[in-house]
Length: 159
Picture (cartoon, rainbow, N blue to C red):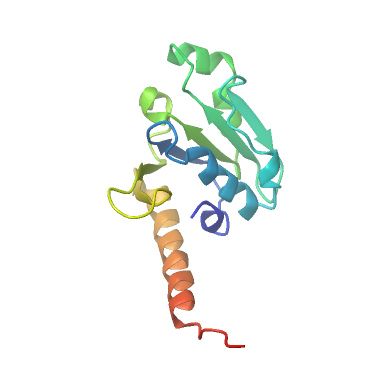
């Protein structure tokens, strides 16, 4: 899913608020996003101790982690607002810790371990919070539906 959103056109800064418990897969989701932007996902790690990491790809990617922050002021001190530049994608882990610091128009991705199924299955909820991100989410969902339809419709290979 992270890789797919990277293929949706981004003009304004796009903030993706990632919410979920420890070990839910937020950083793995950002690695998929990085791959979609042409960034080697092996270079992406949780920025828990550095707060923010920046990567170059088709769009700029900033990966922010709020887990260890005690206040919103700390986020401002590390230059969070400076990351919000046109064409940039900002993925914020633990975004629910300081929601007031996020732009009013952002995408919220909530990741939970699936209640049933395999241990690595996840339930993912996507929510746009404004008109710009609503357009992005609609295009993203269309792309995911096309991908899933292609996967279902593809004939099985036989040897």
